[in-house]
Length: 55
Image 1 (cartoon, rainbow, N blue to C red):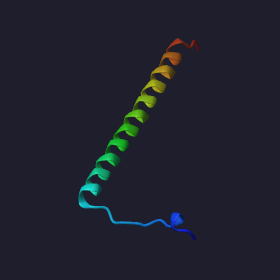
Image 2: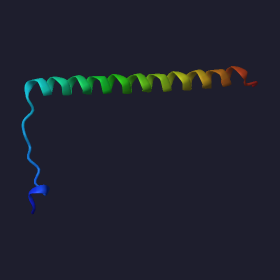
Image 3: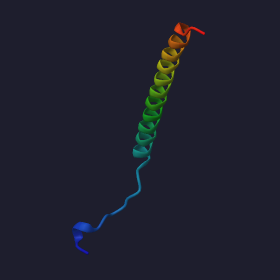
């Protein structure tokens, strides 16, 4: 195994952990917002189609 293939793992500093948690929170909030938007658009589109349907 060459020196190039060797991966050295180091512990994150407290500041790096704090930044990582902030990034994770931002990703989670963005994903949640996306899911809510897709859900609302789907409901609005289905709701409009149901109102136009004749029985």
